[in-house]
Image (cartoon, rainbow, N blue to C red; front, side, top):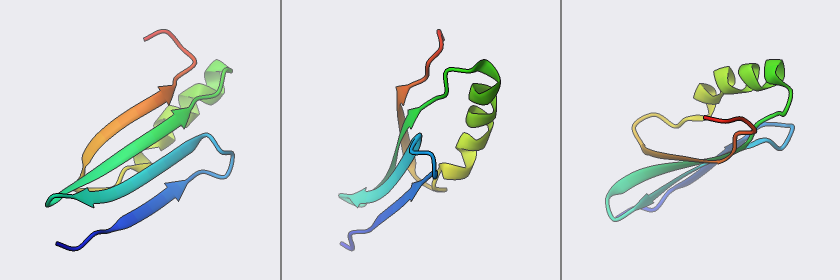
Length: 68
């Protein structure tokens, strides 16, 4: 089994995307800290898709700074 690790992040420190393999599965964990300002938060969430690694099982967590 080959182990892999890829990391992607934004330059403001608001998003960290980690890709790793474990027992023949590939996972992607995204940790976010969304902006407080609603217009900035909307842009942030639209850009979130660019930090997702394709073909992975995804887990997203963090501080969304909004009521969902």
